Image 1 (cartoon, rainbow, N blue to C red):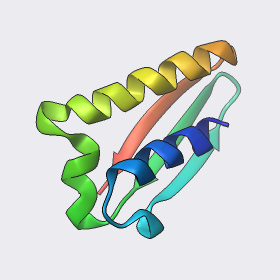
Image 2: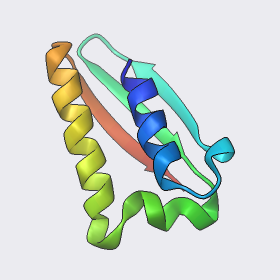
Image 3: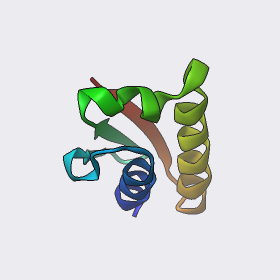
Length: 77
C-alpha cells in the first residue's frame, strides 16, 4: 500500500511517469521505500529546498502510522 502511494505521488509530479521506479524493502517494524526517477525529474521530486520531498515523507509517515509501521523514503539518483 505504501509503495503504491509513493508511486502515485511521484508519477503526478514528473514529466516522465513511465520512468518512475519504486521498490520496498520490508523489515519487522520499518519499511524502506526507494524512489528512482529520470535524472531530469529529480528536481521536481525534491522541490525547492527539499519541500516536496519533505511533504511526501510527511504523507508517507501519516499513512504508515495507520498501519502501525514506520516508513522511510529514500530518493535515489
